[in-house]
Length: 519
View 1 (tube, rainbow, N blue to C red):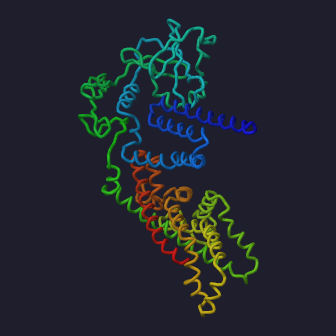
View 2 (cartoon, rainbow, N blue to C red; view 1 turned 180 degrees about the horizontal axis):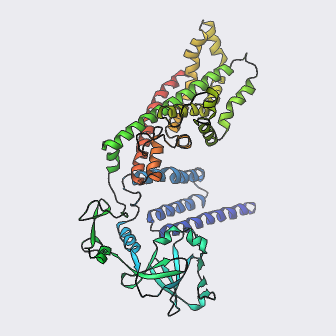
View 3 (cartoon, rainbow, N blue to C red; view 1 turned 180 degrees about the vertical axis):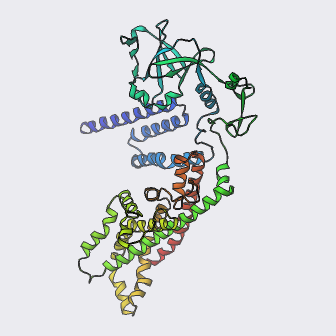
């Protein structure tokens, strides 16, 4: 028993560290109001304690880490994507309605004439990331010399003993806070809209690096009528603009074309899926991309498999000399990083300086023409994919018993007939599931498309749907690089991708099940 005591101590030390990490993460999630994740972490902590604190449930001791990672990296992203697909989350629609009201009113703060300016030092709470943590304004009233810490929730007085000032009276250090330097302040774009609320609807806003002013918002919110009122036109003798809620956006009640940029996130049901299937423009683009997506995946799988199988059959011939060296050479494209190979091929297809045009004397704009770009991508993917199929088919061929081929030869079967009737069925028994996996991979082959063409070329004067776009690159553009990113619609496209791949895989596995009878 004594000999095992160090291991018991180590076990409990590891359990304690893991549980401490879970408690720390739960505290962060609780501070952000993500109570569901707090509950999930609590359940995971209890499961760890129940499994590893006793000598029972030995199989679960090995399974639990995999289950946790499966939950974190498979189930949770799928659930989150599904939930997002039913929202309008995107550019201008990332906040709650109340947060949008607060952002609109606070960003309209203007300086009140005659009010003194505060001396400002920008800080974050001690231990926080200077680039991402919530900002804190360390403010000094020039009249009373009282120092305040200003946050998004308001002002808090600081004791004079807790701050250090320079000769000019500016705070250079404060207990519990980290003061940012000029470069760090300039790097934070969020400070342009950050304000510290004060009494009477006023707020303090930064100006420059070392000053802040107290101002009042020129845009107010009427909770009774659920209206946002812009008072700025009143300075020119014009009536105030009144905005009401419509489709999660504040719209001018007199002019529907006048909308405020900041809306809010809300549930939209099946609207994203409906738009993809019924909106004429979106439907045409979706169907065009989906058609090319199927062509790309199917042609990629068939071309790489057939070339890999042909080479495997060739090098499986015992009469061929130097097979080991040639096999090693053929595997080289698979050994190189895929993103490097894609970039090299993209440069080779360059119309002016590319190796392909220079060697052939052609002037084809390979990546600037829709059809040529598709051919270039398929050729590149053939180069990237055939070594994998070559390796797999080589292994499958070498596992086929020699007496089967001898029996076929005795029966008078030709070489082609032997390959078609004996070799191919036996190879497909091993390779069939891998072909389905290869289809799923190529259906979502984001890196190749993005590195070579970024989905382009874009024809017809539009920049939304490219000639070589796959559904995955289309979803990426919608979510991150378009003029108006729309995470909800991109998530809906991702759901379509999942359903298509799931149905295709289910059908493929049903077909390959028949190959089991070959054995």
